[in-house]
Image (cartoon, rainbow, N blue to C red):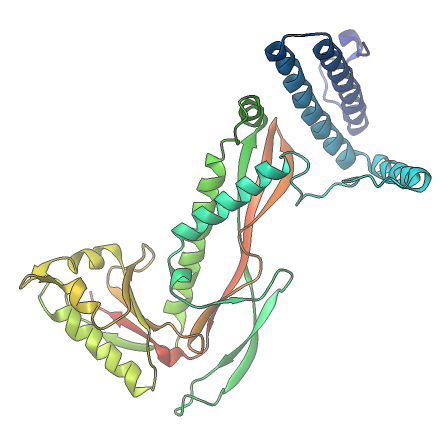
Length: 357
């Protein structure tokens, strides 16, 4: 066995960068020794159940080697160069290509298996998609990964046909980090299960909430949308009258459906009251395609939108992408990110109803 005597370690002071790199090399050596030991012992054991324990522990040690090596590559640039040179020499001599010879922060190969990373990515996308509100109703334009900005032609002329302004708007980046512990990953693998990704799903929820918040703020800050006043929806028939008035404004502009009405949760609750055996919500749905509640809409506001791509869309570049950042204090840091922009092409296809407080 190869190891470092504890008396040789400095006492009472922090390790320098070079000493940390040396410690990482020694740790890698120790882990490789442990892997060889566990595999040798496994090969000498007939009992399959006991043998599997040693084999699983050996796999865990291989993960630790990867962690130490990833840190070493960060601290020692020369080490990265030598590893790459060695990989090229192996390929030249044998024709064998060495995979993952450089550090790639967006790669899951550093920590999770291919199946584990696919599971993580799909669940994150599923949860984010279920939490998002506006993308379910507003048309989506796929700009593609690598796109930083998208064109926007705005129509504000009376004929509603001629674009009067063409600009380029940047895609807004939203991201949130989460942590998976190595212990949790090891435990799941020992039970042949997928890792617990509760933190990832919470991060996906936050990302979706941030996206919806951005969309509402952009809608409310647009100066050219139509704006009308509305009454108190506690009274029967007021909501119908207000939405009918808003629809008439859209029709005057030559804007057709489908129409979607977005309201706050408390205003949505008012629509559930029954008048003459029918709720206000049911009556409203005879006028618009759907009535949708969002926590980001103020209680005194309702937003009526023509959900047509020539009126509005959400341009998406990176869409709910999961990246591996790196190890941190025995855990693994990941990031979920997306880049989007709300494009209001014809603001006259949007009506903001406001109750004066």
